[in-house]
Image (cartoon, rainbow, N blue to C red):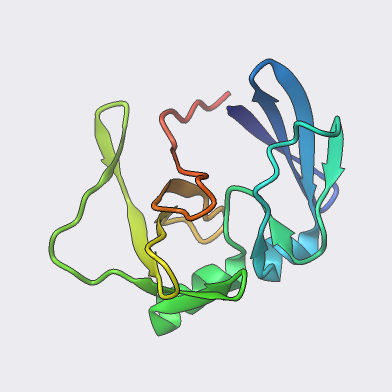
Length: 144
């Protein structure tokens, strides 16, 4: 999957290309600010998908990110994710360079997520051990 971001008024739009299918996922301003659910839809069923005001895609909300920084944890999809404070860190590497991420672990299962250390756009860089089978690693960031 490849995606680009754009802002239209207050709405964050992710333009996707998944297995040759182009689509757009629109996140409401309130979701970007304080969403509590992650959408796993990949835009394959509709050319334009408007997420609920509580849903984000490929990122956590700014408030969840702030909760992580302040409390060492946040809740998303009714699951508590706790900051991994272990010394042994496996960095996310893009173009041969490690990128700064926060590593969190779900308390209900074994899901692990690496979140870009960016309060304005806390992208999910990697997800592993997801019981839904949706695991991924961000492999490239291209600025235009």
